[in-house]
Image (cartoon, rainbow, N blue to C red):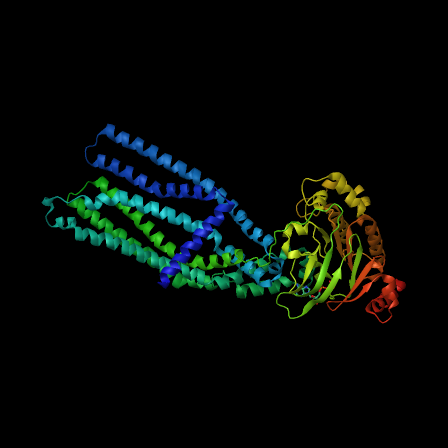
Length: 621
Ligand code: ADP
């Protein structure tokens, strides 16, 4: 029963694999099926016509009939082989394409994961493991297509074989053949057929044991792949170039490689190939040869007794041999199916990571007056797996159109506050409200449209400048120019020959432009401006700039932000002085709130302490 359950599971995960791959490449399985059908029937077509020609040659030798068989044979074999070759080529192109396309499944998953899941190392490890399994020997999703192809080809091969060998058993030896008449006895035929199937199964089992030896080394192979991934390309690593030359690190690499090479002749696979894996593979082949020999004997004896002519011998022996190898392959496939199930389980474990975050269905009001109000009501939050409260009992309300500054030392919870505001995480305690309604009740994409955030670790992409700013290939060029100019990138833009079409970075284009950290920040700010959302948030976007340049950007930003609600985060207090309200974070709590003047007046407060400490630094500068 357990075995049955396991087999059912193996088949169902592989069928799911077929469905998933079909989703990303709809034509693939149709072409693969056609390719397998043609591949499987071609040898039988050849056998069929050879038999006809031989029979004519050995018996009546009629030239006109012989010609007909030769021409028909050449045409049919040619047709089947030509179509087979066409589908084979098409299959190979689609297969190469499928390697890339199957990544869509993983990318889609990565994009749609709850942010908290994206943060978990175990999910990254699982993805890395899936990739390793694929790379070291194609286990996982890509193996599904081999299993499918081998199954279809095997089944078609067996059916064609049965069609061509049926008369081997049914053509009787004439009574004049004496003792050989026993070959007509149904029990004898049954025994032979059963033997044929049993031995093919045995041979397949041997082959399956051999395959499993290969997969039982998955752990070592994963290590081998990691070693190769790390050491194999170390010489091309630009950043390592100087150290390698200075300290001859290549010696360490080759010593380690020699000792631990997994795929070398003395590695676990090399050893297994000389031992169990090799022995079982050759046992499989020996047993198959044995059954082929028995078929020869049986066929020849029947022909000797006069059951059929020499042409039929060719047909039966050829077809039966091909059929045995198909049964052998099909049984061997069970080993692959079983092994690959483990790898597919890992793949689907990743693709099925649930999205636990509640997704509301309310749409946010499209308010032209931008009268949105956000309130943090007694919000507390711990990062997943952490004991420590990153935010504790935070209460804060933003006034519409106001300028709010969040200040505090590093690690005081400022970025976490923004991540909760953008619903990258949900708080464990308390609520965040938009116009009085819990933000969880809104549609996530709709809610996100309210914010333009320049994260501390913002990322631009190796695409044209304008597309980066607009987040789209088609965009309003005037608005993109304005956003860049407002963000202070105007002068630099005027030096770029291709303007908005300038490719950023050199990853994809020779004439791409590398921008400095400060310039990249300006582009990121322009991107936030282009989005034109009611809330605009700068999370220390100017970390790469000096304090004076930062203060400049902040004051200019104040102007550009217009009627938007702007939130500034900084550990440099001087940049945020101008804000209507300043919230001082300390160890995850808001310890002070108010205008700069009010806060600085409280000489016992945190703000005063931070201000005094930083003022010395600025004066010195
Ligand atoms: P700030 O922006 O004020 O420098 P953060 O909000 O980044 O501070 O961090 C607040 C606290 O949460 C810190 O103690 C930090 O170590 C912790 N923290 C930040 N990100 C994570 C995370 N992904 N997982 C666990 N702890 C985190």
